Image 1: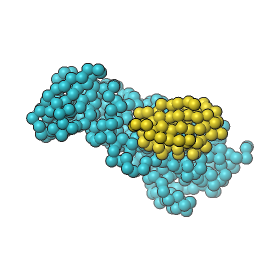
Image 2: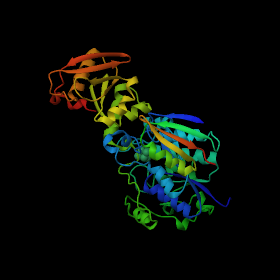
Image 3: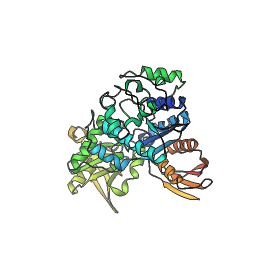
Image 4: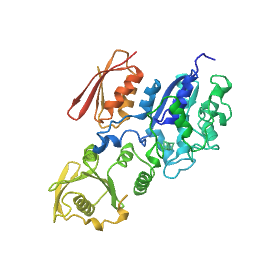
Length: 346
Length: 73
Ligand code: SF4
């Protein structure tokens, strides 16, 4: 065996994977990080879109962690391949549309391909037995190792001593006695370890690392699949689900209404591919129409657009409707706010 | 000098595009990247620091943020 074992660590940007990588570094392992971009990641995005968030300095936590640790970080675009994980997870979903177990299997599987291509010896994750209800259980952790094909080249330094010894431990590449035996939902041991290591500033993800754990987001994705009659999506679809107010007045079309200037500016980028509306007699939001609306539908959408403009109490609001290169202007009565049925709000 | 259009992409996609392009380039070569996501102001320099590439300059052009990068060894 070589003198310096090499490990790739799955870096999410949270504390656990940071600690796992750090423990390996302390044992003299050469560590590089890998981070997967699924399109659903909470990192980035909406911060950059909404104006109110602009003042806050924004950072990509995975990059930040890598810089703190002094390791390289490889960010991998898995948007296309990840679709089958979201659309048809073999192990089902968690509380919302989060396919955590399949997701972990997929990511560790990708890391396994990566170590084979790059001459690395094993994979490290920040998983802790019992920390998460779906993917981090005593009975699902071996499933991840097995189904990803990583088998005993997958080491979880934070809870390794509660699991059978892996290849890096058996071969003496790492010292099992200096690994940990964390378990359960408590975050105290990790926080204590961070303190000991002098790590003060780290991200604390609440529910999970992606939008699929979010109830509202999952509802919008379900609605999209229902309306299209198939479970599929493009990157633009899932980006658009993150922003704006979504209203579906009829099964055949949905409105995406910017809630503020930053969102309006972001939606501008999609104008070419959607029918869109903008109030012209009053200030108001840019609205994209997704689906296949008829003439009556467009008039209804224009009235709703007027409702969200500053002319909501006016008799008439002028709204421009743009279809490809065709622009027309209609004069409509704003839709009364109290008459918008709840079921329309996605 | 090579150029890369990363406009209308949200982070981390611009970083991924830069990373993938730089893989095909030689040390000392330069790459000019145009972005629109303000997050790139932070993420592209951070990624360059980690991997030993250099941000030669960064400037605003209307609504765009442009970086000129030099590939490290
Ligand atoms: S929260 Fe999202 S990214 Fe994290 S494991 Fe679950 S599905 Fe995967």
